[in-house]
Image 1 (cartoon, rainbow, N blue to C red):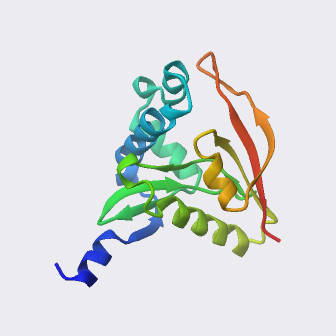
Image 2: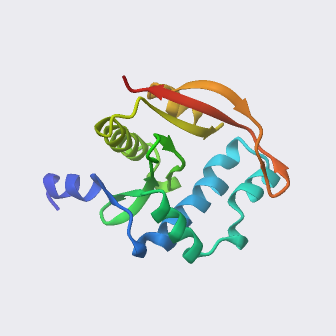
Image 3: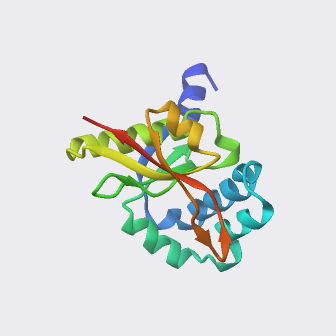
Length: 166
């Protein structure tokens, strides 16, 4: 493989989510929460957040479609995914552990932000984990509030964050 082929093989491609992505994006979500976020949350919090035993691809697929999700691929493999609602809310931004620190989240966020700007949205907002907070801060988001949502009876910590686009 020459240098150009190697670059193409490792470049990030952003595309719309499709039905065939359901199982792989669900696996990315579960691994990102259970492996990556585990550095900042207790085992009980991780389990309540990920709930792998309660997830099914059919329900996951419907939710991904409802959020107008996008996926990032590297060499045809799903490396991460995100979304942005009509009001500029980013509900999910997850990158698989093996693909972290390779610009995947940066490119997903750039795509989401460009879409929001093209739609004339004044800002992006997100409820961001402890783990993701530094990434969002580096990309211009500011914390508006610390929050304590309860999932499966367990209190978590996240941050309501916002980035002005105008």
